[in-house]
Image (cartoon, rainbow, N blue to C red; front, side):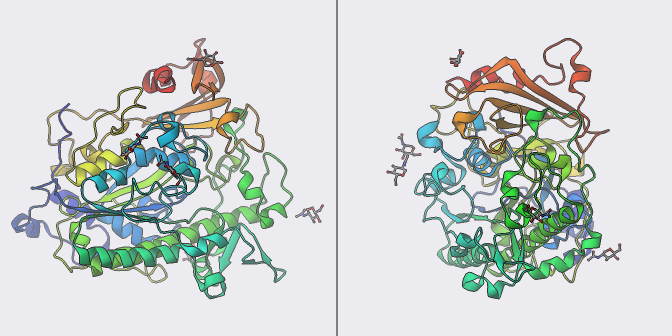
Length: 573
Ligand SMILES: *[C@@H]1O[C@H](CO)[C@@H](O)[C@H](O)[C@H]1NC(C)=O
Ligand SMILES: *[C@@H]1O[C@H](CO)[C@@H](O)[C@H](O)[C@H]1NC(C)=O
Ligand SMILES: *[C@@H]1O[C@H](CO)[C@@H](O)[C@H](O)[C@H]1NC(C)=O
Ligand SMILES: *[C@@H]1O[C@H](CO)[C@@H](O)[C@H](O)[C@H]1NC(C)=O
Ligand SMILES: *[C@@H]1O[C@H](CO)[C@@H](O)[C@H](O)[C@H]1NC(C)=O
């Protein structure tokens, strides 16, 4: 298959991007017309650097994704100069499986990592990772903060030396995350869920994400000096629980302004296998004190509001750090030749469906922000030293929401690898055969460059071939049919059911099949539950229509899951 058409950036795209007033002088059509530097003409640009920024458990609660409450002016500014995918999905809504999936460009059935406890190189296949590919192509690759999940799943080394040129940096203050550092009403220190802090009073007088930002900025200065192409990955720990963040961010979200989830009840027709009881929340001291009933709660309304307030405050805290990082990209005069990608490993349910966690196949858990800033493609190439990302103080400036012109296609994080390869002008890894355990370098995703808006902003793209309509897949394992303490995160040997979920523009269909962890097979005749939500009439995914559309067949026609995922072959070695 020929490589996907490479779109040229359009003047229309620029004008749409200049929607936000703080961008400084918006570019005029005339300026573009006679601009010597026609963006995109010599694309792909060999030699672009990559700044890969990933937040932990961040759903698209951002101004640039239309959230009117959340203040995220720096990420929104990045979005205003980026291609912003509206419908991007993680392949499994939990940290290690999602990260290993998109970093190897394989689905969880190929990494065989559904929990935290195996290393793909020895457990599945010796797959080349995204950073490793850049490293092997002459880039310096650097990991700052949480990129791989630490522990067994990255061989206790963040996959060094394969993926990284130097040992991964982890902030020293990360070790206090789950200790008693949150001041309670009793004046004592607790290990709470909700933990706004005075940074000066914290152990080491700092927080992990502040340290990671400082380290990343040090790296930008070093990388600028040594003049080597780089792939710098910066992983923020927030808004992952516990919500330990500088107290001042609370001021952005007066409690009375914080709304509750529109659908806080467990949906009546939700199969019990689909529900997860958010155990990690219950273990926090402040949540434990609420004496919640297992497995369905509910959490008292006043506390729901406080959780949402602290999640949003954590998002604004991360936004400020991203703003400082991008400001440093300007300062080091690297904005004109560095691709910036911003995303998250998966989302988080903020009370929707009575859930407070990831661990599911719902949109709230699987959908992520995903944006690519590509100088010369999503913006005109700036002059070195020109300010592209001036820091924006969230206390002084409102977010910009509702930017037009975002691709709406259903896309997947498993596509990050081929996309970044194409953007940097490296060979795009070939599509994986099925199975692909023996193939070190291939991708189960597709380069998303084909969905970048093209000249004129219309359907037309570089090639004449019509784009196919993409769909997104996610999956989640369960130990059994009813919510149990290990439903959130079952160990591989305890997995008995696998929920495969298909998301199209119109609906989400999830089928929970019997799963055998000894030979990684599913039994397509052993169905433990089905879910079908029509997005237009039911965007929050509360009204399960699965049984309504069955009409005597074992699987609704709409689902076609077996065809798409080729479950039989992806799961059998
Ligand atoms: C795995 O691949 C790496 C290169 O990607 C290679 O250095 C290593 O020797 C391989 N390991 C095995 C066991 O094949
Ligand atoms: C994983 O780490 C161990 C201990 O450092 C090392 O001996 C082993 O070779 C590593 N595995 C791979 C596949 O590199
Ligand atoms: C809170 O809501 C009020 C009333 O809608 C609004 O005027 C105010 O700006 C909001 N405060 C913040 C910090 O968003
Ligand atoms: C929770 O239970 C404990 C012990 O039974 C009791 O002291 C406490 O008041 C209860 N808290 C709430 C919020 O009901
Ligand atoms: C996997 O194991 C189960 C139970 O032992 C068995 O019934 C099934 O046939 C096996 N599937 C394959 C493809 O080996």
